[in-house]
Length: 218
Image: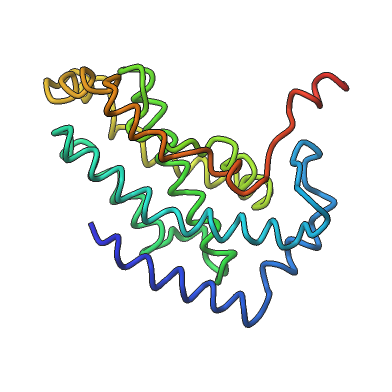
């Protein structure tokens, strides 16, 4: 793993945005195209969205480091490390479909790939073990990022994630003794207490999806 190499890339992209305002301009021009379920606090929507994107990107190294640490502790590093290295590679060697995307715009795409990859891994852990590998709740944040990236490109990124995960974590992975031993620790008080440190990312930033209200109005 070379997670430390992600930090300079993120700092360069943040500096690029501070100099050019490229992503802020792009998002401002597409504000009226955002799904009405995305609710933003206050009136300075440009600042809120840019803060959301920056935090969404900056959280990737910490997320990957946490997932790697949990996998080591659980004795399942051999099964999880290849998946995490794919997420890391999305930043260090972006896929060809990312060509032409630079600065925060490019890293938003790459962060979406990494977050969605971990989300898919968590989904498989929930299905087999009843709890995620790491407790970071990025579901709503990923839906918002999907909207900011826009279709059909975000759908292409989702396909890339599915391709990366398929075959890496099959049923045989979860049948291994080390994974089954990890199951026993998932619901311990210590584990549950540690998970409280990982609140919903979108809620931290005040960006939410108001799906219930919208359904009621429809």
